Each structure stands twice: as structure tokens, then as C-alpha cells.
Length: 180
Image (cartoon, rainbow, N blue to C red):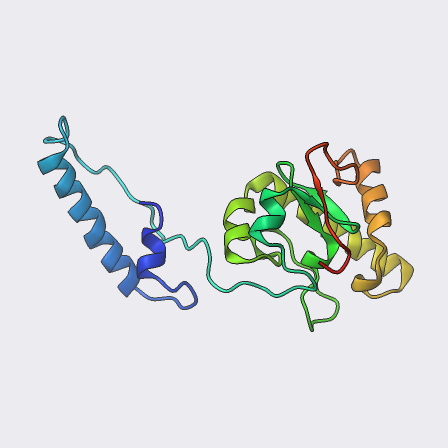
């Protein structure tokens, strides 16, 4: 039921109303399958998740907001610190705008709605976590703010740990501008 959660839950406050609506929707879909889908006349629902999963609610505004175009065009940035499936994350997208000493990673990184939907896979989220962990350690050991950490230092540390920080763009990568 892709997208069904977004239709019934705003995702920012707990409550049973969205779950009750979802349960009714699931029951209606099972009834539809029994009545309309060949071979499903005797189907039974075994189980459903105990919690409603919400994939996207509010989106963080970082120093850079990754766009769908950035992801689709495989835009490589001068401050790239990690790579997804041939797309790149600039360090600025891991730095929330207007908040000091905070780094974000995973589905909370700074991206527009469409970019977030196509880039929230687990491996890129993990490597973003590695990048922000390294950035935090570098800031702490150097006595500087996290936003002042050199992305090249993050990439070097990631390489030393055996990760691919996206420092070498693939042949099909587009060049990103520093302020873009």
C-alpha cells in the first residue's frame, strides 16, 4: 500500500485515528481482493505491522538543499563527502541552516521532497552517518565548529576507514557549483 500512510497520517503527533483508518483501508483492500482478483476468493490476512510507518513529514533546510535534479543528474559537488548509488551528498546538506554544532544524516539530511524519496536507501544513509561521525570527531579534536570542518579531511578519513566518500566522481557525474 505505497503512499497510503501519507494519505492518513501527518506523522508529527501520536494517535490512534490514523491507525484505525489504516486498519479499515486494509480490510477494504482484502475484501476487494476476495471479490475482484482471480484466485483470492479465499485469501486471509495473516498480520500487519504493529505501528504505522511514516516515511516523510517535515524536511530539514540545510546549508544546501539537494534537489531531485542533483540526484538524477548525479551532480558531484566540491564538498561531496559521501556517495549513494551514483549520486553525491555535499557536506552542506548535512549542516542544518541556523543551528550550530548539529549534524544530520540519513533521511533527515537536507533534500527536497523528491530527492529525499529517491535517496533514502539504507547504504547511503549509513555512509552519511559515517561522514557526520568523522566530522564531529574532527571538529572536537581540532576545537572548531562542525561547519568549519574541511570536507577534504572528512573524505581522507573515510578513505582511511575503507569507505568511498565520493571524492572521485563517476564518468556519468555532472559537475555541481559550490553555491548551487
